[in-house]
Length: 77
Image 1: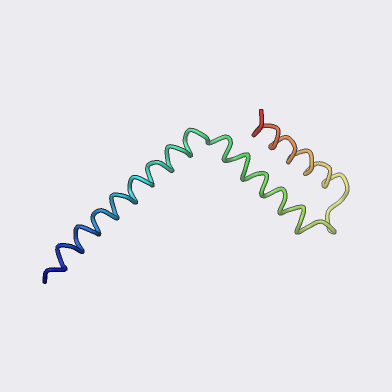
Image 2: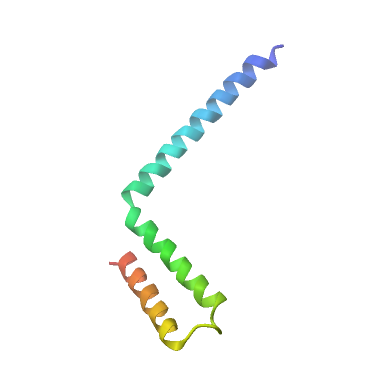
């Protein structure tokens, strides 16, 4: 019976800590939305090149290289 209040306090502390981390992540995503989108597009482009390398045409491959380059350039502007 003594452990019940301790567990309640611990659970409350953990939920508050999770809530604060969630708010920090949301603020980070809102402030750096364009950079996050550019990073996701880079990952998608690289995965497309790795997975479909032998199946895509040369022009599409060059387009993907250019697209990845533009996204990287945006990140390091």
